[in-house]
Length: 108
View 1: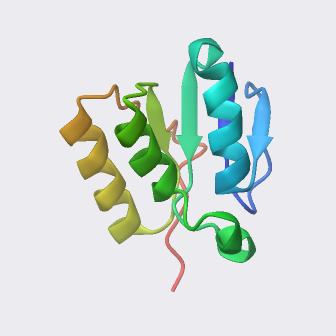
View 2: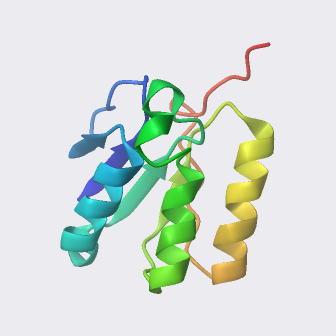
């Protein structure tokens, strides 16, 4: 199953689950890690920050628990993307580029 993790952007076609909170994502991954084919993450959790921080915390938790699931990032935060990609590379996880229609523009 493909999991979309984002506070604002609606789940695109082809994804199965939309999660907005870090704590809920961790709970879901804990139970379904063997069924997940892709985690597609935003970086900034916005109003949901109080439920576990920004979505990079999911990667920190996965690293701590030794969980490896293919990852895609669709954030508009270039600094956050770079930090997330560093974790993914360090852990040797599969990184899948977001499709062009999902890549988010940076707005200043």
